[in-house]
Image 1 (cartoon, rainbow, N blue to C red):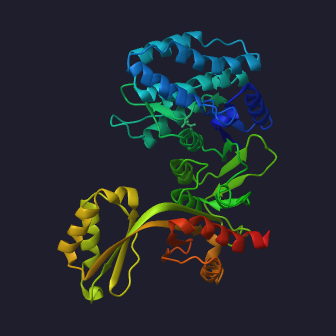
Image 2 (cartoon, helix red, strand yellow; image 1 turned 135 degrees about the vertical axis):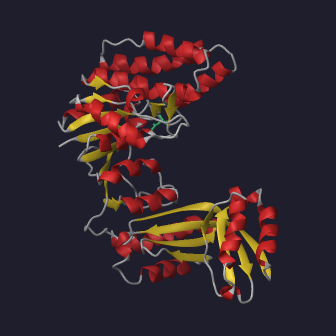
Length: 439
Ligand code: ASP
């Protein structure tokens, strides 16, 4: 068996955390390829090394002295090196980094050094080979990730290495300049490495024991999701659930490699298993609840709209011409609603309104702002009757008015629109009826 293990910043924030990581890796010989993040927060209120690097680089860009900031970053690594009792010096690296910052090497280069240096420390600690991501994670000349080239280069490189550390978050463009993924991008690197070596499992180690059924800021101590499919996860991540970077799913999904989200501080917990498909039914009919605030509904009414061929296209074209993506389009016999992100829509609203008037001559057009969307997601819904009924009963008991309903044809999710101020109560009510009453 071959496993790729990715460790997040909080798992690598201190020597103590590094030790836990070392124990985890040594406990299973299949854990052969390690993808580290940069050191994260050691305590709440602490600063992630990546943020220190961005900040330091901004100072360098303003041509101010960065010595103190570079030293502070160096100290973070030195604390780990000393705590682990390693014979390792990063003096040369820091000298080079300082000079590169002063020569405006770019903010991607700057941010990537967090993972690069942590990779060196990790490789020294484990006695594994260090493989610089700049050599094996390829971006094209426009800075777009080149998955096929990377797959060829990376699998050839790792074929010659039984155990290796590959830093997360960055790669390089054809001219050698460093390019990073978006924030949290080490998850993507882990997934790319798992694909390249045809791993049996991609373990993603973090500081929570897997995905929670819903946001712990809304529901106290929510249950953990044991198994989730890629598609369910995509729905939940899209609607705001974080833990894993949304783009981390694609590389492993292409090969059907499962991802296991695990907790470095509680390795005995099973965590969450993310799979292509499974016959394991979720414990609670629904797999998860996620949502976002800040949507706006553009409601359009026109008599006989249904018989007017091309009506929907003309309306949506107005949004397209204004560069606005739409979220949902619930429609009735003489009504058509377009749901959009309020922040994106706001500056273009007048241009969209006049565009719709010109395009379809509606009888009535109004805007309703401050709406929230809640996605109730679960592969178990397809086989269960009454899920929608239970959701709406729960919301009505909680005195919440439902503004919009949309059930995807996959029957994998039901999207509900409520007012922003009802959002938290709505999530709680749905959680209670499906999960709390079944624990
Ligand atoms: N260190 C980077 C960040 O803070 C990437 C990562 O941790 O995945 O976003």
